[in-house]
Length: 525
Image 1 (cartoon, one colour):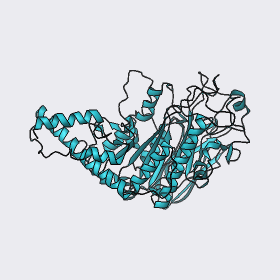
Image 2 (image 1 turned 60 degrees about the vertical axis):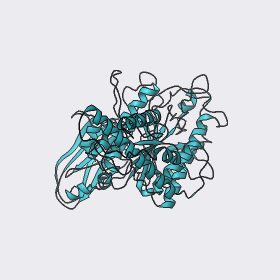
Image 3 (image 1 turned 180 degrees about the horizontal axis):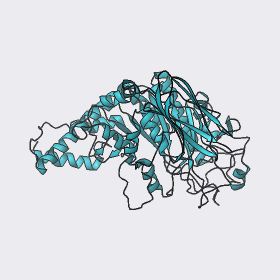
Image 4 (image 1 turned 90 degrees about the vertical axis):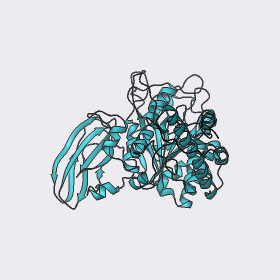
């Protein structure tokens, strides 16, 4: 084949199909994944995107708040029908507890689910597309002229793979189940993932694209173009084989439901089971833009249907992961571009709102409830719910406590100024990375009680050697509140009092010999 013919034919295929049904034109271009595996073990993240704006108030039901029933007379879930997960504090929509399946309610009972309430950001945008870009990019900006073109995970992985984009890994860093690659997995250096819907078709499209022509040695525009397309084609061929091999070797241990989202989770489980070394999997559910006929009187309708599918898909995936022995390697989270208005509209639906709830699941989560039920008597200036936690606090958790990143890397990924802070929420169990162990910065295990705090709480930890310690309090948005301690501490148990005067959600950051641990707590006055 002539070089020009090869370039034309391969580039045309790339543009027409995003390279093999989802492998982006700039494909994936880092070095081998071994470095990432060493830094963050073989931990895997699953991102579940709920497009349209999930209604948090009708997902986690505030049954003890009479105002909820006053502002939602037609679509509220009655108290006797809500599922008491933590009586007096946490009630699920009954669709989250479908009969006959391992589901989100059972995962909570088993210590595999965290519920984050009041997740959002300052100056929220209520456009589906701009708000989605904000959530996926990790850049909270009210400037409409700032282009958001890459994602927080894409930037993190590109920075962690220093040869990017000169060489390619043996396995794709990320896999999206779908026809196109999300902005989440794009970076300034190129895309860091592939998109696919069917491994068999993916394999068929990929075969034969690897060129039999050698790379050209020069650096002219033509030679760079040829070498780039050659590299994309070569790796597309390789990834199609790698994915097919993992799919054929993998298995599922149960009969999944037939819902489309559930089948996406089934495919993810099979690829992991088959040995695919990808660090991130992204799946998608649409339909959450529930302006009309959100829910019927008998709790049927669009929103209950979606919640049932979500709960079933995640639950069956976890059941499969437990049976196959990879449950300890997987943590997942839901993301939705915004919540819904607190008041129902005239069409038995809800319109675009602000803060909502987020599920984080897996054996690696600190199970429980983070944040308070929304205050339905205290709205923002637009009559929307007031957020408690910056959405990036969960992302910081993923970066630092799941993938082994540092606080400085978190600041870099989110392009924060020296005075800005995004602290990990503490929803992920902290692990000791090889770097921490090597440098002697072993994180301490911190206890903060009582929580919620009504008067004074105590922070406690123990250490075997003298250390320098710093204890700071931040609110859920990362704003500094007060310094509790900064100085030397002796070996043994350390016990410090904290007292915050205003109600709200807070983060206590304890840094001992350079290792930071963050503990969330709630103040009720």
